Amino acid sequence: MDIKSLKASAKEPMQAFCKMCPVCDGKACAGQVPGMGGALTGSSFTANAEALRFTRINLRVVHGTDDPSTKFSFLGCDLATPIMAAPMTGAKFNCGEGLEEYDFVKSIVKGAEDAESLGWIGDTANWDMFEAGLKAASEVKRFVAIIKPRKDPAEIVKRFEKAKAAGAVAVGIDLDGAGLVTMRLNNQAVSPKTVDELKYLKEKAGLPFIVKGIMTEDEAVLCAEAGVDCIVVSNHGGRVLDGCPGVAEALPEIAYAVGGKLTILADGAIRSGVDALKLMALGADGVLVGRPLCWGAFGGGAEGVATFIKTYTAQLYQSMIMTGCKDVESIDEKVLF
Image (cartoon, rainbow, N blue to C red; front, top):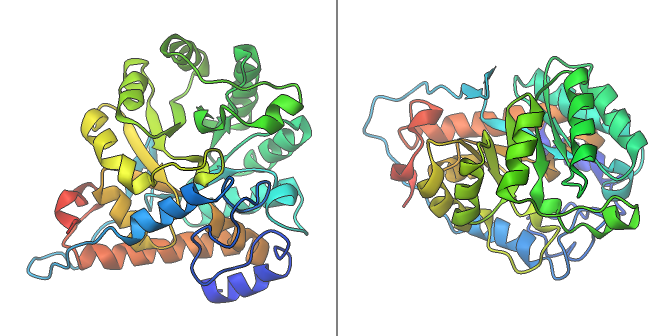
């Protein structure tokens, strides 16, 4: 399997949701939510892609790095790569035909495990889909569960407990989903959270606690004050608010403000290992990949997902040689032009 053949195989089952554009930048699928697109004009999705495209890096060849290490330690998990699988749900509503929720999530988490990475799962307003995802995730050694930021904290904690029982190594909330209309329509109102509410959820988590969807320096500082273990710099793939900056634009100030105080991950339009390198040079400790792993799952199941992660990791390895980075901890601002 390779990426080209996987995308070709995924084209038919995903044809109603994804055009498999040569450049995946959110322009052709703008406004297709549910689906693979970005909200309204798609500008936030496009901003993610363009911010990465316009980030330049320095080629360095006078050094002794010829076999860098891509090993990554994340919240107590030793991984072969800092490239992990983003939390995704609703395969039939957002991606394509042919994969039930269990099969889709199993492809993601098993593929990530086979690539010596870590799969993340999400949740929706549909309890049966959440349980199907948990069942799939429970069949691998470890996973991360991200829960919608329901207004009722008891509903979040209930799902934390289910995830812990299934074997999650960390839990969290995707605050970038705090305005999702679909949740409200299903009588599961979501909302932003105060620092005190984050502290409460951190206490109830009983595992490392993650907040996904931070896009400003001040809110990153508030997460650190709340004792959050990890933040994900993310605009939800451009799917929740039009007009946002790209993640690569927002990341440096956030990293400057809270780097070293908590783990920083980033996602948003990563389409290669070089994109991963760029985000890490801008301040992320590791990254999450979303849409490409949908192509992998629909094109080749768990093997397809593993192929994407392994390919991106190999690209990261090569780019580390060519920028003089001996390990992932060495990827910093010196990489940037």
